[in-house]
Length: 266
Image (cartoon, rainbow, N blue to C red):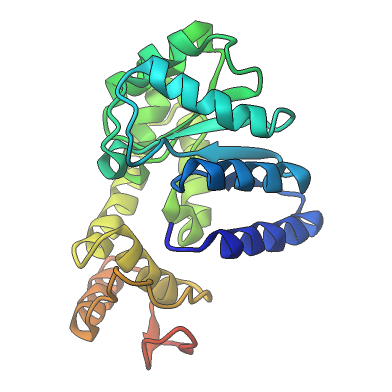
């Protein structure tokens, strides 16, 4: 969301090259820009044969009804008619509070390429409605790291969560336990993940904190956040590292917090 259109295209092109080897499903987020740029990004992604595109709503002239959101996504869908399209529901950041269950009941077949949503919300009642809309026609990805076990109990089986970049094995095991119906073990595993998220998130917003957590807990350093988002302080990093260590996670030592920082094992 802090990148120019040219940069976003370069990122897409880099991932297209990468997934030729990894064989992963490539979903590209094209929204959050002026509509002409969204259309351009959708066409660009489609021309590169990505597997799907994800789209935020219009962020200035915000849609307030399912009808307005459908009309917006129809335009995006027509720009990339052969590429599956999903809507990105993240009301905490967009302030677009259209009920996703009612939206999915309304969309029907109006957008031929439309296949589902990313549901980044803590409202699992709404999420369950979305999950069962149109007899479960649409895929619903939950985007909430702290409610995975509860969502599994409601029937969710698809997730897009930030912490899978940091704790991939733990999350894969959590989902396997959920699938096997071991509720108590899933609860324990979710609580361990949530404790780490709480330790990470108390020092800043999602981007500020997760960038630091990546450097502390993985071999990947994604660098500083871009303005207007500011990096968190060295004191906050030290506290985060200490609390994560107390939770049983091995952390790296960050010797200098910069885009090219080197990390070493503690």
